[in-house]
Amino acid sequence: MATFTRPDTLKEKITHYCPGCGHGIVHRLVAEVIDELGIREKTIGTAPVGCAVMMYDYFDCDMI
Amino acid sequence: MGQKVLLKGNEAMCEAAVQAGCRFFAGYPITPQNEVPEYFSWRMPKVGGVFIQAESEVAAINMIFGAAATGMRCMTSSSSPGVSLKQEGISYIAAAELPCVIANVQRGGPGLGNIRASQADYFQSVKGGGHGDYRLIVLGPGDVQELFDLTMHAFDWADHYRNPVMILSDGILGQIAEPLELTPYKPVVELPSKKAWTLSGCAGRAPHVVKTLILNPPDGLVHHNDHLQDKYRRIERELSLCEEYQTEDADLIIAAYGICGRIAKGAVRRARKQGIKVGLVRPITLWPFPKAAFERAAQTAAKMLVVEMSCGQFVEDVRLATECKVPVEFYGRGGGWYPTDMDIFARIEAIQTAGTTACAGRKG
Image 1 (spheres, rainbow over the protein chains, first blue to last red):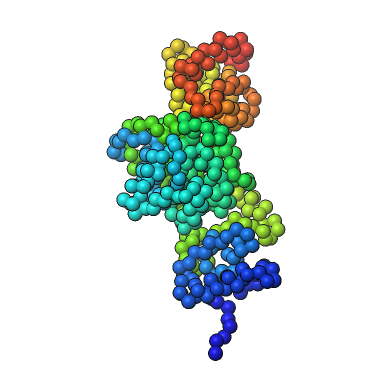
Image 2 (cartoon, chains in turn brown, red):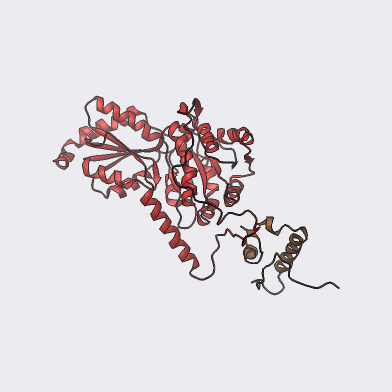
């Protein structure tokens, strides 16, 4: 049975995104892929401009 | 002693960067700095470095932002209109306190201007061409050897202070070919470890974040600015380079920097041959501005003459540094104009003729 858990690459932190916003979903998908590939400690994330600029507060890897 | 070679200023700057360990260059073509990307394009692969011709100046400066965040020595270059395009990125790099070197081989402006040499980007360079309260260390070399040496130092100062350094070259200095001694690279300051902040992957440590958005706490950005200003004051205390040439007994002291300072030196020699007591203050660091040399000049000279290849930018800092204690005359034009030593000498003679009585009292 699959258990729904937080990916390791996401920090335990509540995001600031608005209800219904897709950023949180995309963060989760990206984090799951990083976990699956086992590359969290080799990853440097690049935050965009706009609301998701603060993704560096949510991802547990080096960020710019 | 290093090997003697003949190189253009633009090429010498690149070779100095490579000698100093620069292994990443991103840039976009523009005259009169095209020898820079051309040189790096074949030189970087030979030392295991990276050359990227970016799709734009904006892309290039942001590649430098990224490369600097990994801790590698990196550099971009352009000429005036292209450097204008880079200003947003420069502000970000200064805010993030990342070390890098930016070269501006200045050409005539404003706008697309022309491709002749100019010093009209002085304000943009030393006052902060991008947004926010930040400073660049700005270097104004006067000949190819000095350009070579200062470029190597630029990487050291960038690392030492975690601050971008700008090399303010110009179309003449970039294009002129001169005999040059390839001075072996030797750090001029202590080079701190970058391990505490570089992005390399978070194996075995907490993640590092390089960012310039500071929303929380509400006064977080105020404190970050306080921190930056403390650093800038420290740089002002520690880094100030200036050549004072025949100033001790000079009635008239010329202030000029970069290639213009070199031309002015020719005028000083010419004047001295005629028995006219003229000296030269030639700032090498344009920020920090070498105020002490100007305070000395204001105390000893009867008059100063600022010569610049722009319409009155550098002269403002000279007047600020001398606090109106000495009359400061101005000789400069924009649009790719440059003076000959004879032009400057003619100014000296005119000042001699017109100002003898007015200035006599000051010399006691």
